[in-house]
Image (cartoon, rainbow, N blue to C red):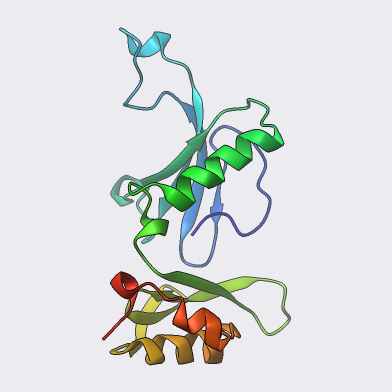
Length: 169
């Protein structure tokens, strides 16, 4: 899960995201750079996640999530990026069914977790603890979960349009 509030674009910035998860921003080259020497590689803003923080910083495992530049993007750039993620076989969005809802604290001010439907399972993550809410056996189970947990209702026409290769059961 990406950022849930705005963060300052500052090299070395680190904070708690959805507790206990931590995030950090670093301005650094990425391993895939094409420069002959690392010091010549362009620096990108890298967003990393630590899912299990420790009191000993040396023990923390940080996972790179994504990186970005400060290059200006125009509407047509976003259109192309969206087209790729919604049509390319390399994008999991074309192969998998995914729906996520964030969970807020009682005051409605802070994200404390999420409920995620991914393919045939529904899980809840809160306070760093993950539990399985449902294993979906049939497409109707998934349609019911989308309606009951995420308030997504399908018309009969939409239900009939579910691709056979992605349907459960």
